[in-house]
Length: 404
Ligand SMILES: *Cc1c(COP(=O)(O)O)cnc(C)c1O
Image: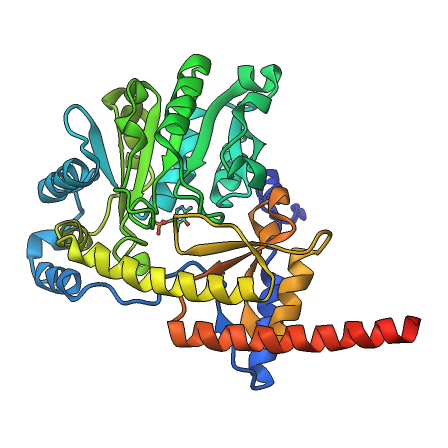
């Protein structure tokens, strides 16, 4: 028999950026094995359980036989109604938009370039940013091009710096505010400028609003769809994950004008068969929770944010003062390698953070702390960092003495 070539993965997969955290995961595993107690600020996965009302709604829905069959692809009528009430109550959006259920907003985001790009089209991705934007462009044979987010611009995309030849080929711009990893939010004027940019250049604005409710400036959640003219260019992604502590449930939704949603839902119909209807029932219950839920959640994160910010600043760390998300974005001393720094924190202090380089080249020189750790542990972590600093200062003094 003739020998055939070995089966291998596509070239597309080979173009995905390497999994940067493998080395860090190994360090963490080794530290755990040595018996080190790890305080984990690494992954952005809420430690607070899903509200009991939501769990109960799902439990009830589980025994409904009609829910055991294939779900409605765009979501059941009760889910659609709950989303529309939620959009009107929290964002003031009503009227002629279409909604589709998602298996988490990540699923929707990952399908955007496949739906809107042809081979070689450009997808503009924020850097630093959620790695899915870049990966989804690569998997669609599109070309990801960075839009740097810089501290001195408040981590708002510098759209005016995008070269005209890139703009001509660009089909999609991803934006995400409140922003992971920096915590930045947009002003109304900045939102309007981004919508105008998308309209003028005929670019789909794929808005990742998964942290819509996690903001500490006392302002209400906002949607890009509130901006005049946005309906022609905006597809917005919402998630139950962070607002309702539901990362494990895998449910969110996309919203946008019928014309933009048509291709999107058409593609999805060929890929998945919707969200388990009992999970939709949980999501609907979540969206109907009273405002006290969000207020309670924000109070917890606010206390953690203040404790960690104060602690780090006391040690002279450079924390970006941003009003959104449950992350702290921290600038390292000039020239520091974020991966090496994060490795050192695990080894020396048992503290896990995410190196900024994991979010793209412009994230180098930063680390991200996720505030998904109880306050007592935050104080403990600051204490450990303090000891590290003392150690470092002693070492520096000793080195200086040697030089004298
Ligand atoms: C967590 C997160 C998501 C994904 O949320 P799911 O709805 O759980 O898929 C999307 N975007 C950003 C920036 C996130 O941090």
